[in-house]
Length: 294
Image 1 (cartoon, rainbow, N blue to C red):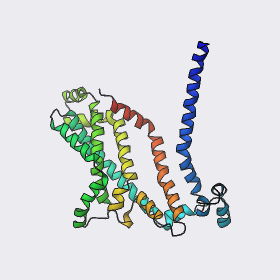
Image 2: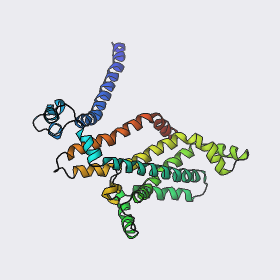
Image 3: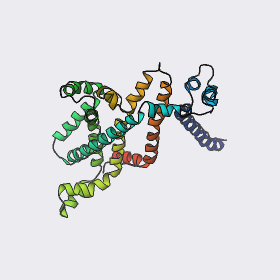
Image 4: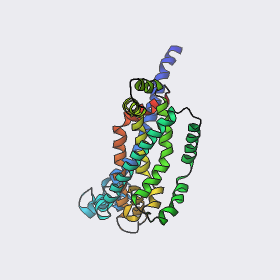
């Protein structure tokens, strides 16, 4: 009897685990899938107060357009309301923030990881304190000089602030990755005739790629998803995608603007799913490598 129970326990436990995973996937995926489906409907269906079945069958969508699906929300967002411009601005901001953060973070993280001085610890502590500050506090500190220099409202202002916010994170993360790489690699390369920078570029960086990809993805997500900084520092003509979506929702009294926001949300979210799926192995390997100190 006891042997039978011991054989049943793993099966029951595995069943519970699979049920939990399936429920978790459903709860996580259904809201996005529902939004994707609803983005091809008209507002009367997707926000119907009569029955949610209207959003499935598209009763009002068929009556207004003659088809069960319509791309009017995407056309209105991307063409009528110039969401393409916000997408282009987002690409510029995220690429610049990621490139600058990784460049400074890689050089700084390597220097601090290989430095034997006590001040490296205090630099990291200062960076941690700076990272813990609310973003809105940092933004308010930049507003006055940006107004005085007449550079408020343009993309470089948000890039400067986002790099300042992101730099402590990249510094700490890349510093931990460099600590996991033995110093013997540097010393062996310099014994063979390399300078410190040549050893860093040709020996250390190839080993650092998983950590660089992981840190770069997190830096990319910061610039891509930011709202507080870009909403306060960018003018209406230079908005990125997230503030632009918020502007759609802020004018719901205008017909169709809600569906513009729904279509824009799907357009902004889908690239993130693709990005994570493509780089999932690098993310896992990078986080694992940073957790092990060589």
